[in-house]
Amino acid sequence: MLGSGLASLLTGCTSEDPGHGSPIVAGGGAPVIIPGAPGDAGRRATPGEHVGRSESRPSAADVLFTERMIPHHRQALEMADLAPSRTSTPGVLRICERIAVGQRPEVGVMSRWLLALGRAVPAEHPAHAASPGEEGYGMASLGEMNRLRSSRGAAFDALLLRLMIRHHEGAVKMAGEELSGGTDQTIRKMAQDVASGQRVEVERMRKLMK
Image (cartoon, rainbow, N blue to C red; front, side, top):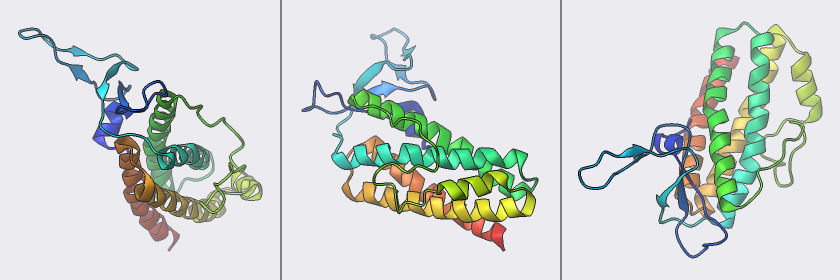
């Protein structure tokens, strides 16, 4: 899930000014208010407007985390989006809704962060095709995704929960690597949110499997 700071700000670094802190860019979530001159009212920043600089500087670990986590989240979203047409189990539908609500905005934050850094956002690709370095982080294979798409009812629930637990555990592992080597405040906060939120969701999914 997104923290309050991530919902309103995106921190990135431009290649033209590598020696200074990352530019803080207003996002599309909670408004960012820019103070006015003495006696004047402040104004709301427009999405994409640079509103200052943070003290953090991105590292290679920050870039690697975002470039891996974006496609990782996309696959989780694809799996979650299958649920409404394939199951009526309330607990499974709730967990999939939480995944969609939490991870879709995170993809947006990470994408804008990469663009502010001057890097391309990972291209869309089939959800089963892991990008280099993603192996071992819980990504579902082509065969697993096809079985999930063709499943219904209790069979869908069991397979989804098994795949999603493994997927979440991979995301927690990825977040731990970012927290060990990352330096950018926004991306470290993202990793903390991923690790804590997905651990909670894993416990909920394990209970649903009993």
